[in-house]
Image 1 (cartoon, one colour):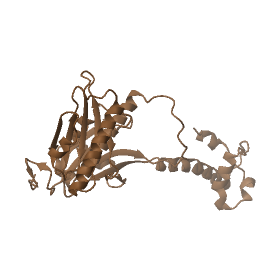
Image 2 (cartoon, rainbow, N blue to C red):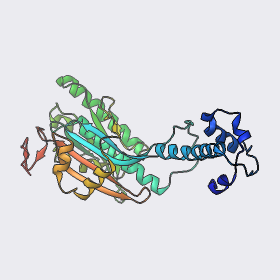
Image 3 (cartoon, rainbow, N blue to C red):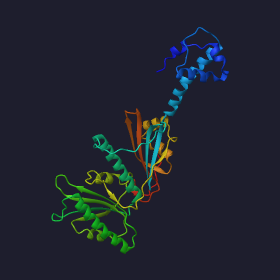
Image 4 (cartoon, rainbow, N blue to C red):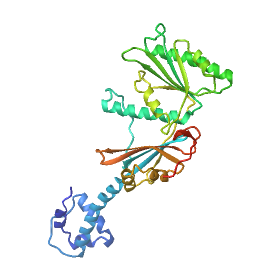
Length: 335
């Protein structure tokens, strides 16, 4: 830290400053200080000494002020539009000068337990976004089980069985003219029982009995998806609770991948505090995001940045496939 008292003791004679323009006084102070060319204290007095000292102090204070401006904290709003659903995340970000991006080196150690939990949370969020952005109540939830004599011994064998089933289903869709199949699949192994189960979400268009017959290795069950106010988030969290493959799920390539839309000027720190204090009043959120109805608001206080983070989940009030208040396409009640 700079000792300003020491700066104040150092004087510059009129002879030092006379050879320079009057407007150069700030530069004089800065250069003398940074290059350590300040002369020992002299008892000379005069306007030139005052100007030079003033310039020195200004030059020392200005960079500190600029750094504070560059490090200013803002509230970032990140939105994900997933068909008739909207996810919003509010959290603080600090603006910093852009640093040179270095390529990531090879990882030698496994992730910590905290990082694994965080990765699982983000994977769960990503899966729910994919489900909401690509499927409706006309699509299917499929569960596939094995009989005792067909149960696979390894995850790789279970994956091959699913790929064979998928090829047969694609032929059914092509024959029925139902278009290209969209799907997300998760394989689950029971820790105690050793049972293997396939959780699949697939686009509709083919008779469900035909899909069940295409399995042939055990029991198959299909049902229509039902979207509540939070969509099928609970189902997404359930099927990904215990992944066994390196990839937590497999998916078709024709899925829509929701992209984040970020805004650092829509929500201020003061506005975020108001939303946290009145998070039970959904009208505040519905005024910020017209056309959407609040399904869930989750505020979380983070000690490491001394600020609240907020997750907001909403759905379109005019949606024709979301069950709201026990009915579909029900108009939102006032209040």
